[in-house]
Length: 385
Image 1 (cartoon, helix red, strand yellow):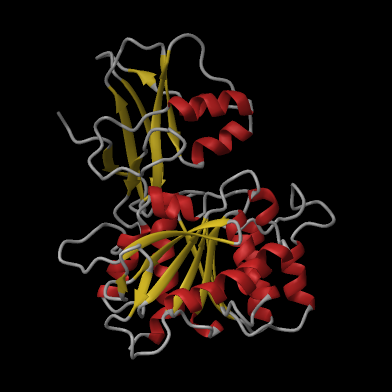
Image 2 (spheres, one colour):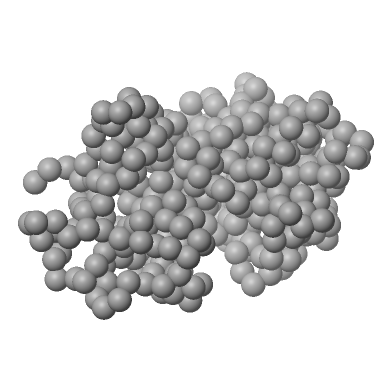
């Protein structure tokens, strides 16, 4: 059997590929292809027909997409009996609960949470490389420990050799960095996704082993519960909690720096908005913001509302902060791309130190996990010994 999905050159344009997904089981009445963000865009428009597979003469189902050769996306297949799924939110949640990875994929899958199935990952040949994502053999492994700080669960990833632990499991300090001064610190929002699901410790260990970042303690803050809409919405109280409770605690407990220039806060979607807001509100603690697919439309539901892009307007009108930014957004993110471009223009005009990147993908951890590594290397890499 051929390798699936099938990827062929586009005879009309060498910058594109023709990508064919196949489903073998002919017993279903139809199969919906879920190409992350691409399918969702049409679902928002009320029409999933462009993503329904066609039954072939051999009984198999297939669909072909024309994609630029640098596209990366997670994807799943949803075989169904009876009518095709609808496009309401309830319909879509049902699809997401039951969609499955491609049984014939060849790349490692993207794990999921909340009991959902993992996704397959399509990475076309010109997609950005992701050299730090996978666990490597022979790389010294750090250690992750769990704490509660100010009522918040925080998983702490310590770099390899950072110190020893007492019999009760508490960090005892020492280690090979004991005389080198405080450790850099990265605050990762939605920490339960990065730690428990995506094993970001492997990425951090790889970055450290290559010297791409200095020895860094990562504070994985759990923010995906019911309070997420409140926490991750330019909330001064939440940012102050991170600045005045979490960071001092980490400095005492693990010897992390209090220097904002060696402190990064990173987030995706609403977390990307919050990371930028943290650097705006508390540049005395957060000197670096890593913002991926940030929800910079906030606080309104469309860019046409009078009060939309509140934070961007604050950056435009207020005194420039001493903060650096790494901002990235996907070309497929039709609801976020204009606002991220606007923020980039404003930050540039105000003289901020900004690295801005657009990747050919969507609102997708398959893209973000590579971008997180790149952003950390950019913001902290120049500080390695």
